[in-house]
Length: 254
Image (tube, rainbow, N blue to C red):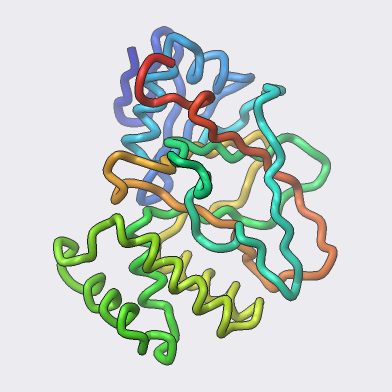
């Protein structure tokens, strides 16, 4: 059984301190490999995944794990070219069904990570991208209509099934019309306008986010976010992730 009351999270006989330092999501403090030993154990996994679904983002700090299911995050950025990971996205876009939950993790390693991972609700990202677009990129009819619809009553927005198309059009626009650093600056503005979770990484931290919900308006998106001008050959700590349906089943028996 799981209970969350004020700043205490309980799974059976296990108790964790919880904080809400951001407008969405929770941060859990623990010791050892509590992520696997407790939260993702066969006894509690279903309840924990439901917690991720409800909160949108669950950050687990100070996790000490050597679980073999993580794989390295790929995608190269350069001073002159953005990686696909630098644009807001859902993971698993090429899959028939996007994974419900994505975990991104910073393992303990000698090199710290200065590059942020920005996480924000899908609707807030779309609205922020539209509002942050330069005026000369808003003239296209579809973009202008989307700007109008996202500026008013949420009930008047296009169906959520169309949001990926609107976002894709904006992403292609800024990729085509802006140089790399201008594009990165644009997305930093989007991070701020969307109220994204852009908190420096700590060693041993895992972030689990809702990547594909039945109600897509509750879905989160994320991106690699450079907080300063990207320098050639700069070194940063490496992230790992996992997101397959087999690792994080939500529907059916874990």
